[in-house]
Length: 246
Image 1 (tube, one colour):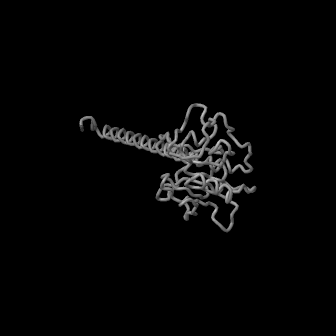
Image 2: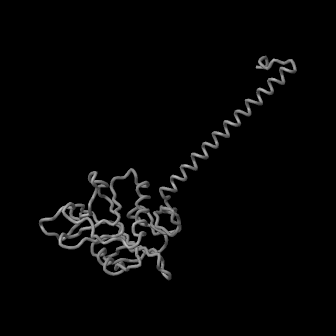
Image 3: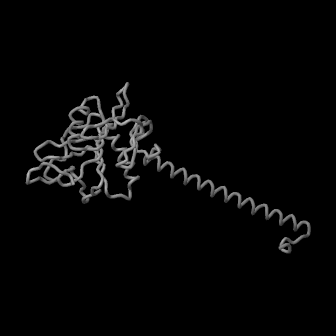
């Protein structure tokens, strides 16, 4: 159970602002977490115990401003409350901390390596993921794991996250018609999970292959039938009734 030092009377999610009204300054701040969510929607389609939110406010105290990461993942929560969905993520209602938060660094530095890192550590978020494609001498992807109250940078790409049952990493690919480096989910062997478009393309290829095989089988059957008719006709010309040969 999540423990928070809170006042007695608490507002509900509907009574709190659902955004800090700060616009994103880079489209990647929406597209990168959007791709991760799209993959999860297929990968965990049968699960209803998770939430991956994009640019959603996290409230940890009614008198403090919300934290709004570019994306975050929570496990063990209701996938949907009702058809209106969540306006925000209120910790005293959810009683579950996000297990992973994602920040996509843009041209305008937003304290991803200082204030936000300290805030997420203080809350107890297990994994803090920072992605910056502008870095030249250091890896674009950093995965920090909370160990004894402090974040420790994890090595490798992808990084396996055993508490989640997924790995996260980056590589070049195509999403929304843009070929560049993207973040993806991986299995324990390091194999990347396909995007929705890749799954659609694979299904189309399988359908096309099946249709080609069916067409080839039909052509062969027709050729065999023609050969049989030609042989029967040849036998008749030789005075042999092919029906008597059965």
